[in-house]
Length: 246
Image (tube, rainbow, N blue to C red):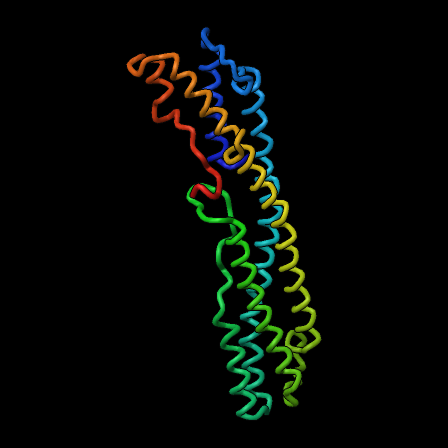
């Protein structure tokens, strides 16, 4: 399934087309507005709109998996800080470590990933980039904690989850998770761009073609005619749902 807004737009185009094809006087000289071309045009939009959902699903899986993985950082940080206090480390080491731990625990990485659903606004690429930076910052502080603890002689835990070798493996997982999300965003963003261009923003987009066709149909009737009123009704509005329009 494609996004609801795109489906609503394409179905509105279909309703326009049903009117156009039954208009006996339809005989525009512009081949761009031929009945056959208009039909092929709006039908071509459905697979392009559906592609967004196809790409969004694997991206969302990676986003969710990363969020679950990064949620473990806070648990590790609290445990490591408590262990450090009991390890025999100097007060200076504990104080310096607290600066890193506080930064790590104070970071929030629960921002919503970019989506293309009702009410979403702004640029999806910018939203994705902001989210990536928040996770990258959290990872950087985790790496800083690892580097600091490696130089604290008293930090020699017997607990497996607190050992630096385990932390190294965890950092590698977090790094891979960031890269996986970034990789899955590329085809999703490409699908969004194609959707925007073909459905809404190109000069010969479906939106622009159907708006031209609508103007031609309106030219065949007076404003008081029922046909004119029907094609200009509120539920017949051809809406630009591209990302830049919101």
